[in-house]
Structure formats: structure tokens, C-alpha cells
Length: 301
Length: 283
Image (cartoon, rainbow over all chains, first blue to last red; front, side):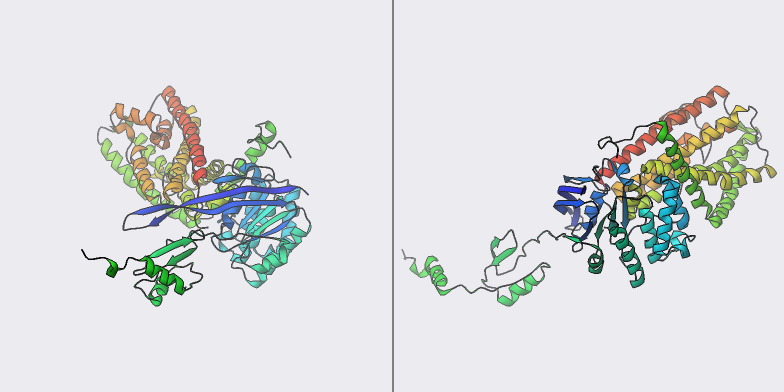
């Protein structure tokens, strides 16, 4: 088995401008991908899932050389994706479900011909691959329609074909079944399953549709969302006493505020998981009473 | 698999020919893409022709009874205007925001995933577009004009070749300027500001609103050398109407060649800078 993708400590940060006042904006650095380590062998079919914003697309963009990683290193087919992007492009195929790589105003057939020239695919190979895609993806009905007039399902089948005409070693698919109907979805899945079964093409797939993964992937990578923690809210009458567990646990003291006020104040925090009201035990109460300077105890002069 | 560490494949005859084939295929696709919009072409021709009449009468009025203005005689002025009206859409001074739009929407990702440098790919497509414009947009005004005005025909045969070269250089220079203006979208997300500056600056300084020879000599010479604008339109037209003796014609085209090299290098440099900081919009 040979290694196709190798990532070590891969990290990508974005600077986000957050509005803080009428004109002022604060710069915040947010890591979309933080320390990813991954090894993918030739012929693997890898499912890559995670919640929205977990950096799946960002990771694929770093693998394909579109984005420069902030830190860490990555090799795809033994190449450095950004520095050797045009050479890497000859050996990988990419489908971004929400983007088109076809020429908007050209018929599908012309787009495929043009791709053959752009990737310098020998004519016989090009014709053979196109014939196979036409059979499996049922392209014949709309080969002469300009891309802008295709339905989403048709376009997606076109995109898949476009990504495969140069016989890539690795196929990256970013949500290839997004907003497809059941029939198109099955066509795409069936096609990818067939492609993966030959064992020549490595498949890296991100999706929110777990049926895709179930049907296609023998290995699953889960990206977890490590969202930045919100600032602890300031609650009147209940000072913040303690911040524990890397800022994940906040301890407030109930002084003048009641339980209901504090809980409703905390409810605004989106990432709130659990609230516990802890009664101090009697010893602690007594100890605190004794420890506090009692006004009556002050001797009069 | 070749060597792993070489960043650029060696430039040998074995890959120069495929390179040209790719370039040619992209140019042909540019031609076809623009040929699909027939109504737009017809509308454009009508507009160009109407404005051709306006501009031509204005310039002929400037020439007045003396019959010359800025060193051009009446047929030279008419040719300047009418060929200029056609050339305007061949170099495509205005109205190209394709790259900026693709940067804004994030579709530029697809351009980066091709095995061709984005500047090369866009240039090839633009040359194809210019080829289509030369047939569909340059010819009609030139055919219409002789029915209404005396036009100037070149008297020296090398002028025709020089004009062809000069017009091609003008297309490449204009493409590079547009690419740079569009590429500001990598930093600004909204290119309307730079676009307005470009529209104003190029219109005045390229010789569209009036021939630059109307300006004092020191000024237009400074413009010629210090800015690419006269190379966009004024140069090919001056070459065609033989405003200057042959050696000056050649010098003007040589200045254009200089701008081609400088601006294409600038495009590649800007593209490289942009890719380093690129954040693809919209997930």
C-alpha cells in the first residue's frame, strides 16, 4: 500500500472581523482546522464528516492547493499542494458540490472536450472514460445543453465526469450529493461505489448525508467543532467566582440575585450544556460566617 | 512519476507544443462562449455605430474649415473614430468583471484547480473573445462608415502588419489591466471603486474621448511612456492612420511590447500574492 495523503499538524486560521460597536470592529483569529493528522493509503475510501464549520471544506482546500495552511505540512501524491498546485491538478479530481468547474456558457460536450485539452489527456483515453461516464451516469440526454440550463442533478453528474476525465489518482468530493433528489443521489452513489471498487482511485468524501458514508466508505474521520468559547456573561447580583476546565465551567455566587435570574441570564449563552445549582454545605456556611468580620464585634473606642 | 521536487517542468519542445495546444483550445472556447450571445452582439453593434456618428461629427467640427486637428486631416480623424469604435470592444475597455465576480462568489476555486496558471488561462480565453469581437464588432462599423465619411487608407504596406501587431498587443495590455483591477477583489471583495477609477482613467487617457495628440506634446509623451493607457487604443489607431513616419510607428509598438511584458509579470505577481492570503468566500 502506498501513501497518497499525509498531513501532519495541519492548521488553518482565519481572521474574522467582528462588529463591536457602531464603527469599531475587532479582529479575531479563529482556527478552522487545528492540528489535523491524517494518512490515507491508495485505494481507500475515506468519509470525512463533522458539523457545519468544523473545517471539512477548508481541509479539502488545503489538500488540493487552493488554500495555504497556516502551519503544519501536507503531501498529496508526494507533492506539496500549494507550491506544486498545477502539477498536482493533473493527478487529482475535485468536485465541490456548491461550485461548478464547468464552463457556464458552453454545452457539456464542449466543456468535456476543453477539459481534455487542458489536462492533455490522450484522445483515446478521454473517449474511453467519457463513454464509461455516459453509460453509468446517463449523460446522453443533456450532453448538448449549455451548463447554465442544466438541472442541479444533471450538472452534478457532469461535474463528476469532468473530475474523472483525466484519470485522477485521488478524487476529492465536497458534499457531492448536496440538494440532489433520491434518484440522482443514488446514481451518484452507485457510480462512486463502482469507481472505488476497482481500488485504483482514492476517494475522500465530505458529506452531511450519512447514507453516503454508509454506502461508500470503509473509513470514517470525524472533525470536531472546537468553537471559540463565549465570554462569560456578567450577571447582576451574582459575581463570577471561578472559571474552570479551560473556560468550560463557570461558577457564579448567588448573592442578591435569585436562581431564576441567573439561569435566565445564562440561557442566552448558545453553547450552554448544563446548569447546576449547588447548595453550600452547612459547615462552609458557618465557616464563612465566622471568617467574615462581624460589625458587632468591632469594639467601640 | 517524474522528479518530486522540481516545481516547474522543464521547458522543452516536447511540452511547448502541448502548451500551445492547450492555449489554443482555451482561446477557441473563449470565441465560442462569446459567440453564443447573439442579441448582445447586435445591440452592441448598434450602440457603437450610433456613438461612432456622434464622435465623428464632433471631431470633424473640431477640425473645422482648416481641415486638420492635432495633426490629423479629416479622413484620418474619421478613420480614428470608426476603427476606434470597433477596437473599443476588441480590447474590451469596459464591462469585464468575470474574475472579480468569481473571486467574490468563491468560484475562483475551480480556476485554481486547473493544471494551467490562472493568468495564462484567462489570457487565452480573452484572446478568443477578442477574436470573436474582431469579426463581430470591429468589422461592422468599418463597413458602415465609408457610406457616410471619407476614410483614410494606409499608404505603406507594413502599416497593416504593424496595426495587426499593435491591436493584438493592445488586447493583451488591456486584458492585463482588467485582470489587475479585477484582482483587487482578492483584498477588497467589492471592486466597484477600482472599477470606476479604471473606467474614468482609461476612457480619458487611452484616446477614446479625444485623440491624445490634442494635448501638449510634453504631456502626451509623458502619458505614453509612464502609463499603459495610450497603448490601449491611441497607439493602434495612430499606427493605422499613419500619423507618424515609419520609425516612430515601430517605436510605439515597441513601447506596447514593453507594457505587455511588464503588465503580465505584474498579473502573475499579484496572483501569487493573492493566493497566499486567499480565503475562499462562502464555505
